[in-house]
Length: 263
Image (tube, rainbow, N blue to C red):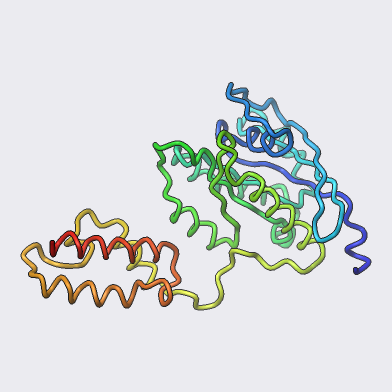
């Protein structure tokens, strides 16, 4: 164990995200193992402490749960200094809260002394309330947004207790690894793992409104044309070849489209 590692006894985490995205519920579920059904907006900053063992180290985690209300901007910005990890939260049923993620990152950057300090902060993004059916943010789109920034992404539900521990431990591990100067973003794609063309094809298939459009065919296409189109797309979309986010779903979709058109 290096001398740098032995010094790690305490880490500082800050939650960021719009109001009513469930930041406090995630923290309470993780720290207190309970779900608060009644909505109670955070007033300024709430504070929680937990202990974890990371890389054989006993770590005390100080969690500062910030309010998403801009009324408390003056309170919130006092806690950016020395923050080592950010839990960035949005509501999968609220597209506006997802669009606001960039705004929260801008606010964070504004209160750091340099871009280098920003690069030393581990960020984990939670798409919260994943147990609800009326979602407005597609999981694949959220993953793509995170991949571009080398952030890790988790779909969570504090009510159903889904992926809460996984998301928090991911963040804690990243912080400790960052401090130990051995941090490599888990979600960072390897060079040339997929091309823009491969990603565009995946997105075209996923957003197609009917079977013909999905396979790139005219509506009077015959069985042979359907099979030919499917074969060509299957080669391009197979997850073993196409590593773009959503390729597995797109591959399944063209199979369903083929079946629907030739039955």
